[in-house]
Length: 345
Image (tube, rainbow, N blue to C red; front, top):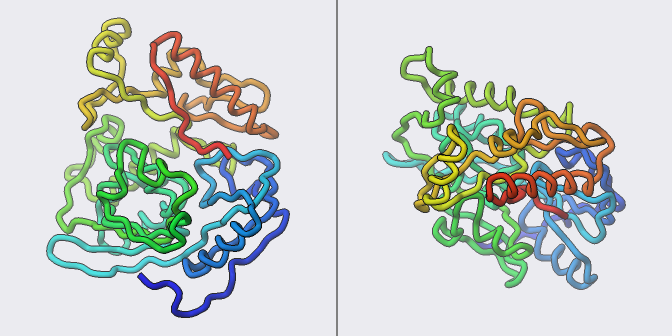
């Protein structure tokens, strides 16, 4: 891949840039330097200048999975790389190349509008396409890794653009090679391989319940059902600040699950490919009495214990203090450690 044939305009510099509207928690934050990256070709010169200036730096997509401090020193890269096009199609698959800056839900909607079903279970997840593989986002029985063919990225360590195959991305539950190597890669484009053969994924009871009255649900039916469930369970960040699911669903060995299931009948769980059991973090938190609790400016959402919210004026430390309290309480009651999903800057 050659991204240096035509010299692009440099990334736009925004000094003392307000990031309050660039994070879904609604945390007040001012970036010392922010750079709008609208094309991959801008990255080599930009990263060279950042290194020469010895600035700390980080990438920010849609800000849906971050906890930001009041002041963010150094350089913040705002990845706004656009684009979405079908690169090839055959009887088995259609390959779609998508710019890292495209909104994730916008992309899912685009696939259905273009008769490319498969991603509908992942509807209404906030954030950008470029951020999706880093966390290996998932919902209702699907993970984004199942549809990724390869990823184009700028390797800051090698000062070069690279293409990583699906296997090289080392996807796991809420994990990837990118997450394991923070600060090394800047995702620029994602290639999705969407099968032509489609079958509904209705393993989750909530989804099946919403669709119970529809015989042979189609992709659009599932898309709307997922949006309905997520809207009911998760608050709109424009109304109340949040980052969606705040904790990962923990994986525990089968013997630990059996012990817990005897102590706590009705414990929700799902088999995992690793041979372990995946527990519902929201259920664990709810059983500890946190759902609907409010402590000052922060709290736990009344409709979903997995979601921490900013009622207005909260700081990053307020959120982390509440998260620590929840982790300690769940560990004491169940012997299960909860891991925070959002990135802490």
